[in-house]
Image (cartoon, rainbow, N blue to C red):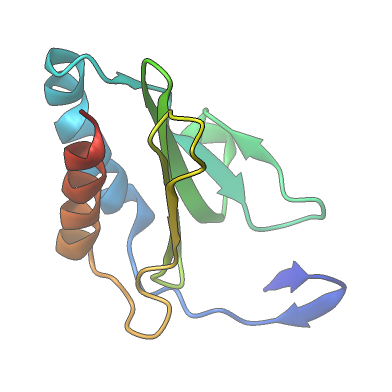
Amino acid sequence: MIENHGQTGFVDNNIDLDAAEQQIAQRRVGWRRLGIVAGETTWRECDGWPHRITTDRATVADADSIGVELAKGTQLGIIVLFAGGWADFMFYNGVDDGTGIVEAPGWNDPLDVDRFGQLLDRLTELFS
């Protein structure tokens, strides 16, 4: 059960976050080769409010999201995958023209682990 803006609701766990984290781990060497700096994977604890976010998976009993931040120069990409199967997908090209991408893939059609991997690849390709 999670709380959201004072309301309580149930969200189906449509994706295995530990398996999805392996998709992140498999790409770390490639990101490094491309000059992309990847932050540590973050885990959000479902219980409590506000939700606790940590990089220590062992301290999270009931994860409801994982995330990773990528940077190259002034370019920034962030992806947060929620147990319900959708993701927050953001990219800023690092130029002051305000161009960026903000999407919620999987919102109407939950992602699986393979599609999450494809989303990570798409984010990687946005870095120049």
